[in-house]
Image (cartoon, rainbow, N blue to C red; front, side):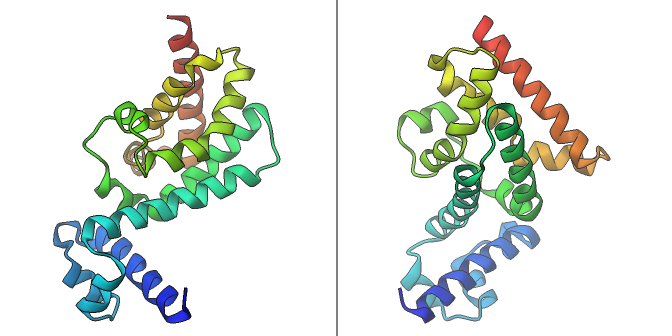
Length: 190
């Protein structure tokens, strides 16, 4: 990709994040293009719709997590907990924008339908979740539900809510992780 194309895509994605944080109800291609200091025609050249732009924004965050997860040298619960801390860092940076673009379709339906956002989420979390499952003696056939539980418990809205109500971030992450381990064992034992 040409340098100007890379720069323009980056400017549009940054403008999406800023717009989602400051005025989520005003999410139009015209607003995003203006915020990125690009023409509307240029914005449409890179993204055919606001929905495609939002998807690219979310995928960018997920790819960051996936890369971190794949590169992490830890194993077992230490791997899971390290990736959770990285997720919390990303939520702190991007979460206020990400909460605005959550899907209305259920997680398992999207997972089984090979949704283009959920597939990289699965890729990012597969190694850490399977490591935690092995540590907890949870059978491998519960992986999809373990991923479902992760999605429910580590939702950016809930992480930000816990922190904004006064719970220190490290304590919020520790409690959510303990709740996840308990939920995973409860699910497998039911």
